[in-house]
Image (tube, rainbow, N blue to C red; front, side, top):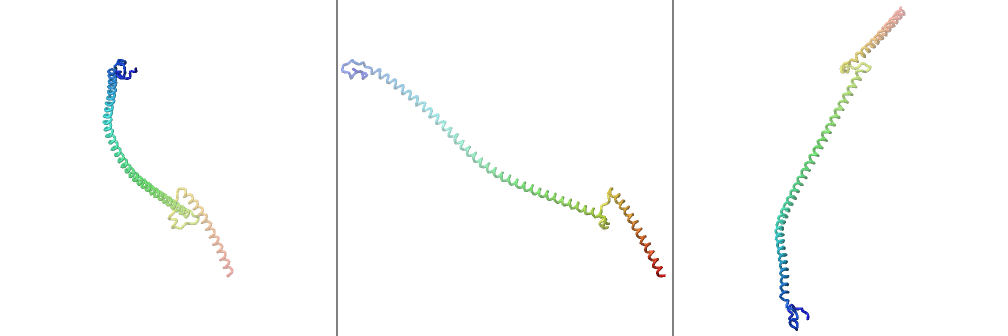
Length: 197
């Protein structure tokens, strides 16, 4: 027969199979106990991990809340700083525009003053040239203009002396011409007197 039962009770002839139920049951119970112990160890480890995870999760939740609060504060601070920056940029641009306008006004005033100074210098130079031309003209200047003439420099007396010399020659020529004219007049008067006689 085939001993498919642990105690061989299904066999027609008793004693054909040995009774191994007790031994097989003990082995089965030992294996089941080992499996149960392993399962319990696994469940204990799971409970430990779950407890650790729950504790860590609470810490993580608190940390996440703190991070969110810090993030919101940072965003608010960033917005405030952005507004301050924009306001400062507006003030800076206004100051730069004011400084630019001030420099433009100063530059315009400086250019106008420089132009006025050059115009005054040019007018004074032209007036001096005109006065010198009137004072050094070949014809005798007007007495009033002569009074306005500047005094002669060190180089001018020689020219005046030379002019005086030429002036004396002119006077001598004028005297000779007057004497000749007087002599001619005398001769004409004598002839007139002879004809009358």
